[in-house]
Length: 113
Picture 1: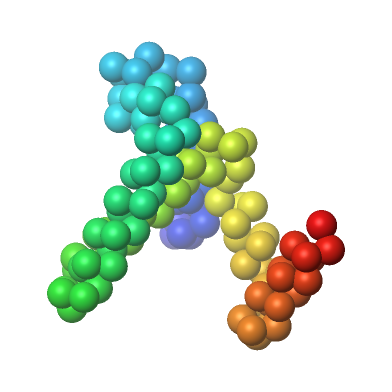
Picture 2: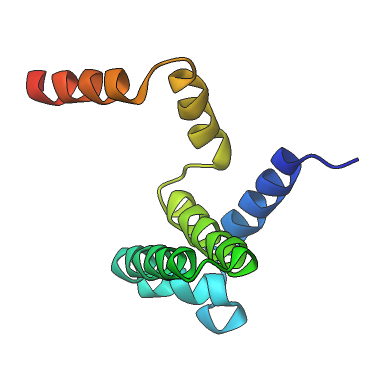
């Protein structure tokens, strides 16, 4: 049986392969062609749509909008040469650390920079 991690890795490979494609060949290639601002704007739009779906209370709508948000976030990650495994590694690093403690550590690091 295929794991969810396999799905993310396969999607990541597809997104990476579209980087050099002609913009008219696929939606993802068109996003890459529009540049970072367009990709970031799509993540913001999908985040807002996810919030609105949550406020509506429709569980299926929340799942579908979250899928759109994750997809566009993966496109943005690929733009920077990052993959789902990079985010999963960060989540694993945070595992067992309280959110309050983790945020305080990041704030200390940013202040020291």
